[in-house]
Length: 385
Image (cartoon, rainbow, N blue to C red):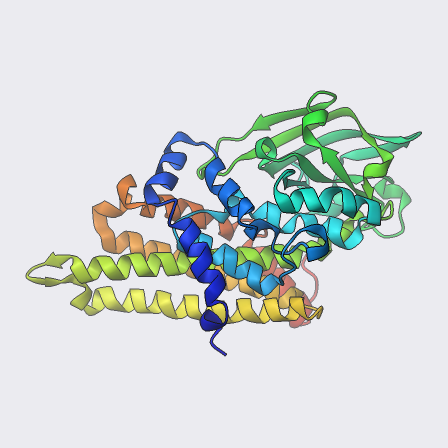
């Protein structure tokens, strides 16, 4: 099956929208270290960020496969889906585990874009990926939970109305399994900033809006608890496969962008009386990059198909993310190298995309942790941590 042809209508529509925001737009946003507000609004109004929300709540009711095509095309068009991909998958925890009342309250407004749910508060400075050791607590007092603690690398807080927060509701020492005793809450960010939440932006290499959060006696209504108290870790895990697969799609979009850009350049760039693309030393690295992006693409489709069929897909989602992030990063290096000094010039956009795609060697899960997952769960090797 030719997936490009199967989803060509989606590709054409997303590309048409992205064409309204050319390289110059994204370059200016990056240089000013601001948020692409107009771009995200346009994607929202067109319904693309509500793709995974069922039609009964105002979304498109599409599968992860279609959602991945949307993310891919944003990046392939020169944009950065990292500015808005949280709106696409963060609501999954609410959709799968929220009450009927919660879903009816939040999902229609998330689908329309009236409310943004772009942030998820999980990672902490002293625990990193060792999520079961988080120290942020939520203690129930009457009809409210009181939250104290700290989070780090929490993205898009300034451009989100709500955040999904993971906090420990039962001390680690009091649970039978370390994965128990954590709970998920919906946090009204604007209200929280007035009553116990402090947000400190973290300047970073990429124009990726991310922050450190401090909670001091922040009160959250008990009705904002999602699902059962103590089951939050399981709920978070449910959404990670979707996140990793969508990130893989973004990296595939980046990979194709780099290959497309460098291929055009070496066809036109004449040195020593011939196009540089005529030289095998130039051709072969580009061809290798294209092969690796295509191979990663196949694993992306496999992960999507399993997810949409409600089949286990943890291995495929992890491997898709690894292969796509590796392929896009290698394509970025080839593209930069073949452009020579021009690759470092902001007006060519390569250095911007180079920085953006490098992030995915680290986030949302590092390469080494994917290796550990494969070693343990697929190869049957002893758990290494």
